[in-house]
Length: 122
Image (cartoon, one colour):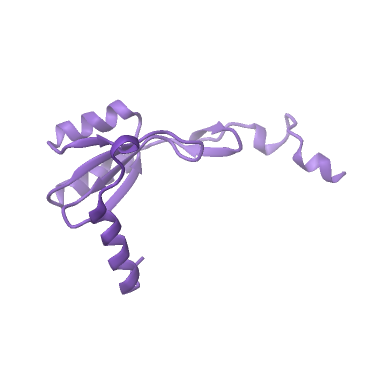
């Protein structure tokens, strides 16, 4: 086997098959959103106050994600089924939702990350 053979995509090559729980995009595998992601988001919103949602578009590395940021900057990010699902989730829970590609992420999240890093928690 030459070194070039290692990079060829052949029918028997593992990289040419779709993943079991996601789909192929370029050279990466993207895991699809599942019920664990949804239940985590529901629980997270229920346990915090002042939550805002930031819908992040699909990229080459990840699918559509929903970033939830609480009043103190604590945050969580999970994959979601679609942009529409993310906005509907936020509307159902009566939290504002924004397009992260347009508005960016809030300063309080960056401040939270900085505090945690200084404390050794991140």
